[in-house]
Length: 509
Ligand code: GLC
Image 1 (cartoon, rainbow, N blue to C red):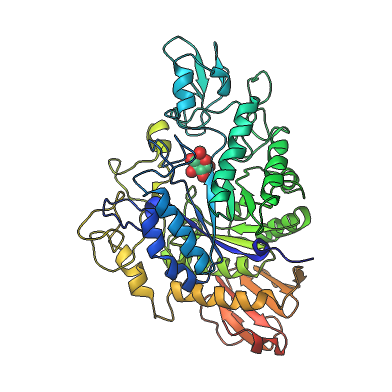
Image 2: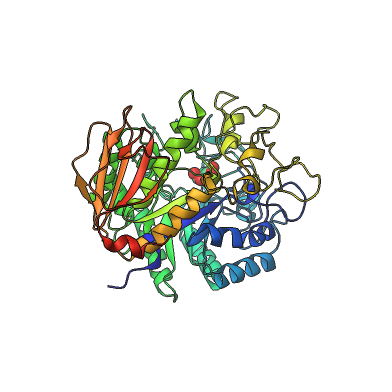
């Protein structure tokens, strides 16, 4: 069987608002992404995933789409998108775009029509509400002028579609065609376990985003993905789809990636695992046992950056663990999704002022939850303020960057062998060479307390999550380590790649 490109791919998530601003308005845009493609090529990723850049009132950073077939002027034009795709392809980078099928913006023409009393069946309107809550806080229902309520599982500006209406189904097939015809290599599907709600909209006890309930994970959704798969298969070039599926069961997750459905689904269990060898081992075992093509992810635009998640009182520990987790993740079978800025070791920005915050989670929870702005702070490209090279000239970025970003900037790290950026570059380059040399399967090796050792053919990976150094497993060559080794010892919060054969010569990195 030919191995599809996405099986072992490294996909880099670009949160477009925060990556690079070419227009000089303080907000990242498509031209900014295009200018930085050589940086991504040099980093060594295979594909980029662009978060929504469609026309949107930005009630949820663009995940409230008013027109599924356009580009918001904030981010550029359709011509900018087309030249971005063309240049990415020239550089050998694939391009995935986000598709948001669970809900539209309240500014979408269909919802505007619904507000006028026309075709309300494309959304979920009722005379009375149930007890469902918005994922962002507060009730999931908002009343309109004539007294009816509409359902929004996220912000009030994100009305949920009624997927039992065939027109919704047909519309999304057409939206996918629109972007496939413009050369995209695939889609990241937002809230992929959403779309259908249980008939009758019964009250719920637990509506957690992570479990199957009348709100999430209804069986009908799988027919949608079967149709989408048929459409993707009808295009040349191995187009693919990856689902954002939050679920607490690996068996449920597996349903989304049956051979006639999605190609991949995010594996959030990996990102949710605490810093513990047993927790890591369990997720790895469950994943490899349940899905044919594994994926791994440590950070994205919705969660606290992993450097901070793993950090204790000492920020250095967080960075050491983040680097060790990366090396471990890149040694696992399957593909990995990186989030912009993790290659710089960016931490979560935790001290944003209330005035600076923009995430609806902060407002809908009435300030109880900080929201997700802390992982969305614009990328520092250069040392100098005000924007560290994010915007041209003296423009301030849409979210303020902390002064510590200067030291973490690309400019500062480039060429410094000890930097996290150069570590990522080396790790990705080695991995590229390794992919052809090692089997997809993984074998556990005896590991001392606190550590986890596994091998894939001639590659052995060891991570030490414990408090004491451990002896390295048997090897011929040390390929790469996430931090300094002490002779034959692997210090705490460190991971290493070892080769047990002469194959090391074939891994140049
Ligand atoms: C997904 C997105 C998140 C967004 C939500 C609603 O979880 O990743 O950013 O707020 O869907 O669209």
